[in-house]
Image (cartoon, rainbow, N blue to C red; front, side, top):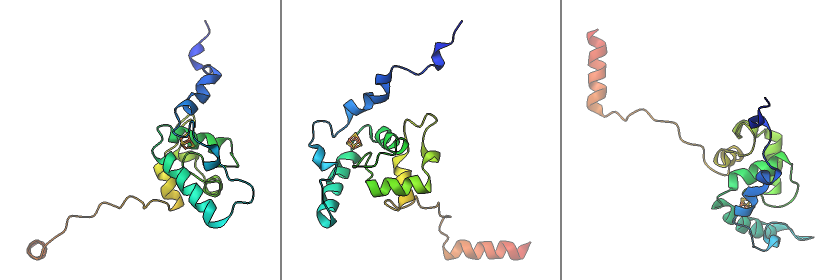
Length: 141
Ligand code: SF4
């Protein structure tokens, strides 16, 4: 008997996430640059679009979609065109899930230097007394 569990689901499943995007119903001009846009106005528009993306419930899927399809234009998943190009060059697949339907956007931001890396666990602070005890214990051995 055929195992249908391994067959891809309906094609609509691949796009269903778009119905839940926070940009739905917004002016697409906020996410895609108009002809001739440059400099500060571009930066402001992209920053505003990224703010919408940062609270979007389907951001991880949107970012994965844009990377997998090499979407050339617009802000997708909270990443600008230039940022996605950098991710395509540096690699992003290791931060995607198995089916590449979703990606760890926080770690992608760290990779781009947009978010500080998680600090390493520091050893517990020692005061003078515990250092003295450690020195005495070492000397007693
Ligand atoms: S992450 Fe941004 S571009 Fe993608 S669906 Fe959400 S709001 Fe829209």
